[in-house]
Length: 154
Image 1: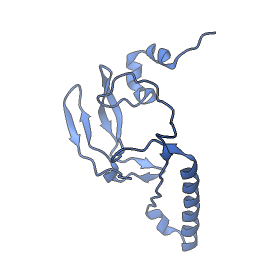
Image 2: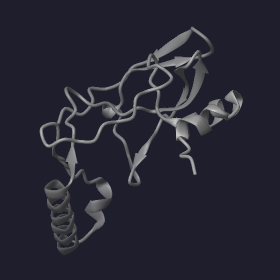
Image 3: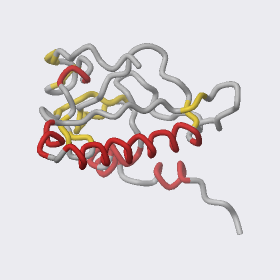
Image 4: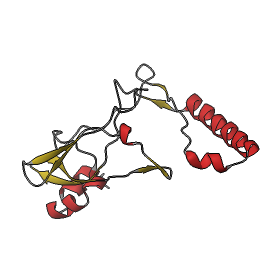
C-alpha cells in the first residue's frame, strides 16, 4: 500500500476548480509562491503562551450587573486556561485582519478580487481599525488601494 500525498491529489484537480475553491487550498498571499514547504512544528524556543484579550460589545450593557460580573468571570477563567496550555509563534509587529474574500489566481499568485466591508468575529463586527491596507484588483494588474486601520499591536 503506497502513501498518497495531499499535494499530488490537489495537483490533479482542474485549475478552474482550484480558482473557485482557492480558500480551501491555502492562503497564498499576493506575492507568495504557489507551493510552500510544509509548516514546521513548534519548538519550545520559538513558542510563547498565547495572549488573549476580551473585547465586549455594547450588548453586554443590556445585562444586569450580576450577569455582567458572571460573564466576565467566566470569560476570564477561559482566557486563563487557554493562556496556560496554548503555545503560538508570536507575531512580529502589528497584526492586521485580512478582509479579502475572493481572489484572482494568475501564475500561482493570488490577487484580491473582492472584499468584505464588514467581517464578524464570534458575532461581533471586527472594528475597521483592525483591517490592513488592501489592493483590490479588477483583473490582471489594475487595482484600487482600500486603506486600512492601525491593526492590533499586541
